[in-house]
Amino acid sequence: MIAKKGQNNQLPSEIKVNFNELRILKHLRQAGIQKSFGFSSGYPFQLIFRLIFTQRNWYRLLESNKADGLPGKDAVYRFLNYPKFAWRRFLTALSVFTIMKVSRLTSVCHTKVLILDDSSFYRDRSKRVELLAHCFDHAKRRHYKGFRMLTLGWSDGSTFLPIDFSLLSSSKEKAKINDIDSTIDKRCSGYKRRIEALQTAPEQIPGMVKRALSNGIDASYVLMDSWFTQQPLIKALTDQGIDVIGMVKPTNQRYRVGSQWVGLRTLYRLSKPVTSHKEILRSIRTTMANGVPVKVVFVQNRNKQSEWLAILSTDCTLTERKSFVRTA
Image (tube, rainbow, N blue to C red; front, side):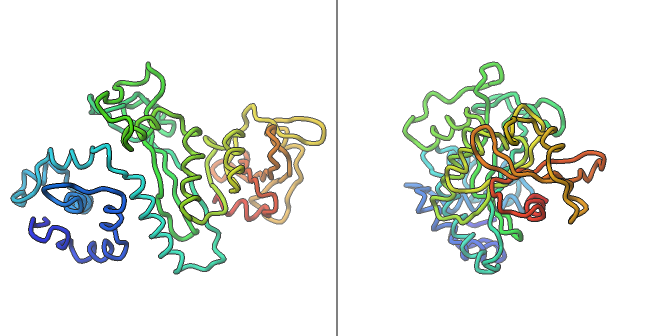
């Protein structure tokens, strides 16, 4: 592994080139991720990063014959858990710098988008992890212990880069297994992230998108699935000047057609058939109950051709095909 001498200069060449090109250690320092004594902050960061490619955990590494000169397990855990390190600031700075380099390689005509995703983060064997909660995996239809991982990514159609994330616990006392560590300084970044973990995804998303845009990340749309395509969130995002494209399901959300308010199934029947594309069935321009004008495109369900899926876009100038391609 990395020797103690020349701590920041002994990564494998294929990793070292990327570290240098993306100025990762510089972004660490600028985010305030520094140690006042002992190993430099770049040293444990590189060690942890390299573990991904060796397919080992820290315990196995310390048990191996390469453990001499490595920091102890406690030192590494303190580095990872130190609540005053601004990891979000580091990730944002690295993302902005990487996007700037990637954008030079693609045409300016490529549409840039932000993509929201939420996945399950399992910790079934854990007992004392802070803010551990009982969660439900909708894909596997089962309960588990752990968190939900809310991720915001950027894409130009060729590249995907994660730019922000939040581990979500639960605000429900019955679902929470452990609470926030009462000894953490309430003024630090770590405490703020813990408070965020108790919020819902729709409460966090506007702030995540706002941070991305305010840091100069270029994007014209936010893409999301049906879990997030709800009217209050759509309004909060369009108020920031960015359009939304997302799948929608039949719920109690209402859309205005003429003088009547209708649900999604009725909206399908009232919409105009499209004959120019075999996978696009119908489309219609309408207005949501919160006053946001939208275009809804109905496409054929590839998994069950007797059914349709609905794609909503707040950019009413998009053609049916472009709306479909953005989410395909």
